[in-house]
Length: 243
Picture 1 (tube, helix red, strand yellow):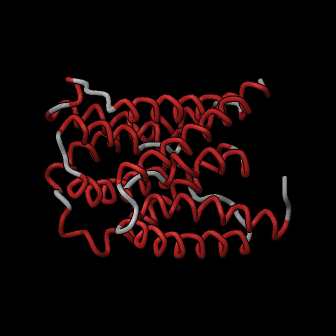
Picture 2 (cartoon, one colour):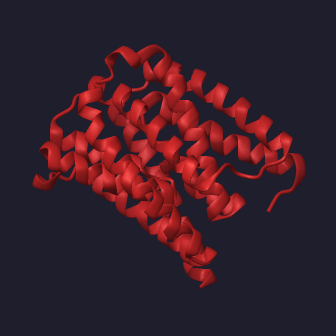
């Protein structure tokens, strides 16, 4: 594992990739970056940093899109997530590190495969679907840093367009990550590492905004999901090998 400035540079690169994806697509920071952050920092610190960074890039995206947010539609999702976030934090705090890595890798891989299939599930429609998706998302976000796929699946089943989805996903991402941070605290990083993260978030916001107008949605989506699947499988393998 790299140390010193090399580790900070690698950390910044991981955050830059995730922030660019999140700014472009509304979700994706955790799918792309959480597995790598867990391998770099350990699953507990990696997930909390993923929560912090995903919340920050969601807030940046909301600066220009908050008028498109539909608070009434998001209320059931956020309320359900608020109930399940503490459970996710409790589970994550009690699992041994190899087990947490394996669980995290499995959750990421499963979530990506479901999103790739565009799974249509009757239970994810209507108010009940919003509550189910929010509860699943809150638990996964707090335990493994990957709350976005459940919201993405809900949006697919609710018939949301991309234009509707992105600002609402950013609004949800900001709130659920703040809830996760409140439940678990902030990561313990040195000042140079925090500077690398801040610079990467700023750079990712610019790059993601630029890419959003230039990369076809289907192509960007495919790249994001393949990167996420590779990260999930790698993290799963790392956890299983250490058990």
